[in-house]
Amino acid sequence: MRYSIHEVKKKAEIAIGMLFKNDSFLLENDVNERSISHKLAEYLQQQFPDYNVDCEYNKHGKYTKELEGIRECDEERKTDRILPDIIIHKRGTDDFNLVVLELKSKEGATSCDEKKLKLMTKKDGKFKYDCGLLILFRNNLIEQYVNGEKIRSFKIEK
Image 1 (cartoon, rainbow, N blue to C red):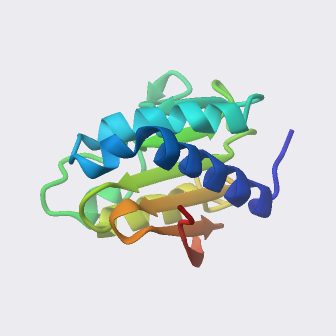
Image 2 (cartoon, one colour):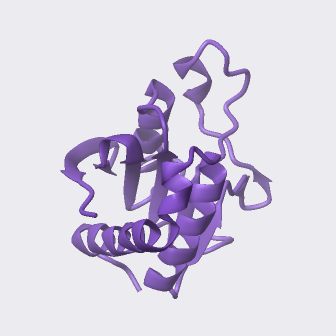
């Protein structure tokens, strides 16, 4: 099943609402971003039961997940390897790459986060995700990316 961009946004908002309701402790007590990603992935799995929801998934088929050009976005990056915080996809195929998510619990987005979402959502790119979401918990903001462009920002409703 494919989801429209509107459906993805609505389901992501439901999952984030569940995170705020059930796990606000994580956001309020400066826990590691991976803990937040894990819990959000659990709620996203409930919203997208016909997809796989994975944290820091490092494979593209049998190979290490790499994104050509991402190394240049930061002086400290040594490779083009990537570990998206959360992806919603069907393992083993590029035909059902639905959503890629990057989360920021404390600081704002980096140029690498934005570039990663732009490159991973390009329809003529390597991964072709339908949608990218950058979730900025500190600002209560979500930025949505489609076909390599940021299309909108919206507030997280608590």
